[in-house]
Amino acid sequence: MRLLNQNVISANIANADTPGYKTKAVEFESALRDALGVGRAVKPQGVEPGHIVHSATDPVQPEIYDDPNGVESLDGNTVDRSAEMAKLAENQLLYDAAAEMLKRKLGMLKYSITEGGGNR
Image (cartoon, rainbow, N blue to C red; front, top):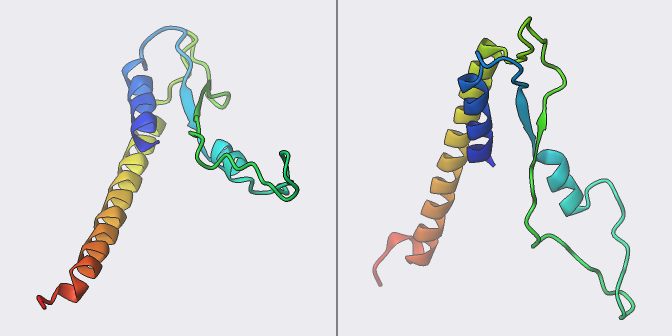
């Protein structure tokens, strides 16, 4: 998700001087909420009573769309370069934080596997 967002933001910055280019944005959170069933009741489905069809293993597809919040310049371009640079910096911080959390989680798992680091 972070890589896709980075690519979309980078494309926006690269096209900041392209006439008629519309700023793109990525929407992932609503697709994830829908996949997880947040905010709606999960109803039993299928042949067996009580059987629940769960789509948590289905891949969640983010949506790339033209951002309607952009202010159009005289040439029809809606890219705000400084706003896109701020989004790029924020996305990089979130990526770094996620990578660090994953690194620590894997470190804890490694520690647990080696029984606390002791050789017995």
